[in-house]
Image (tube, rainbow, N blue to C red; front, side, top):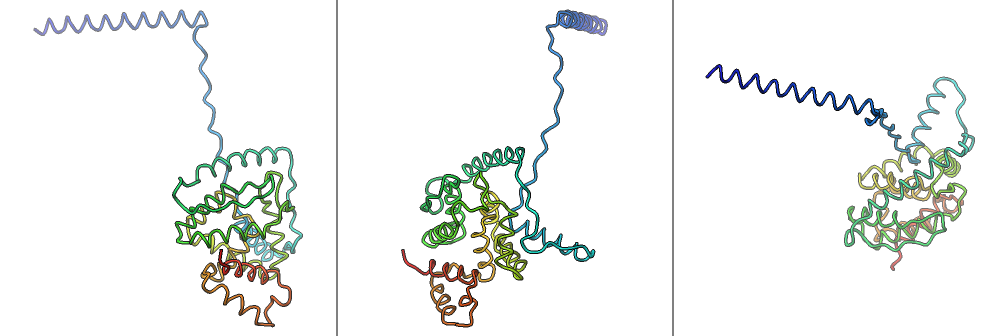
Length: 279
């Protein structure tokens, strides 16, 4: 029996060697004839670009940089003097690609029909299509327990307070972070750092809101940042039942900054009136 097994094993080994020799001969001839393609080099994976910072994050970074310069005895940028990066051809291409990526991401975040508030989309100019942002906001607001009425008031207010064809908007319809920061610096003055911290606090109070602001770029809108700063001061800002009383209290106080022409105070009163009104 052992002899028989040995014979079978030897025969199998011989057959395998024969097949290997035939394969070798075939591949050798193919190589000589140029029929085998040269191996393709394996390219390195494309580097992943870091997520762009939105304005509140950029403001916090600039504040930290200024504090470091001050501690080192170096000059600190004054309001409105921080240099602004000028666009170039490569940046325009990059922004165009980012715009396409943003449009795709907005399509992905739109909630299915029946989920979230179905809000009316304000008509803007050709550079600003807000349909994706408004649809996504309707979903976030609904998930956060905000009524459809208040959600629509917020959308309408942001539309009313956002200047069309603003110089802070790039040609692709995205906000220029440096110009937004400079504009808020001029408006808020000494309260800039405090208000920016409040805006960041409000934006990160709900992961869904933070993701929405990051995903859509709405976190770079100066109007949205002003609204977030007010929300950071008053977590009941969006309550229609108290909005009218808050506005009346400000208007009845002749020492309030509103009567001295404060842009921030007038912004707040306008929003309170918007929230208090009935549709």
